[in-house]
Length: 81
Image (tube, rainbow, N blue to C red; front, top):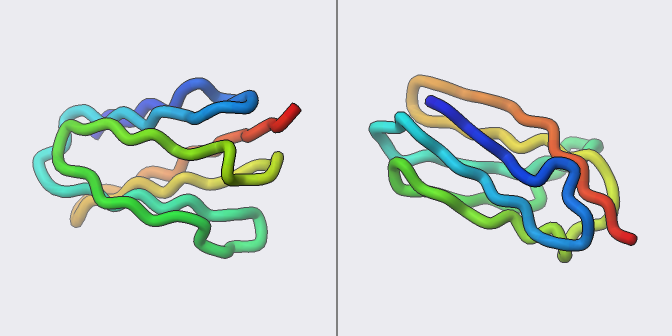
């Protein structure tokens, strides 16, 4: 599974999460520094989603991308100016 998150850091906009090489549905979870779940998405295989940075405060977030067999954790920085 290939995962891209861009732009990172994000300035006053949305970030795009792009998945390639996925053969099953994917669960994406945005987690704050305190471990709280902020958003939860399900994506069909080989899809893209937009992460709404405008609804989040400035900070560092973990984006957990998982299928039944694989799991990747990405660091995402959101900056509001």
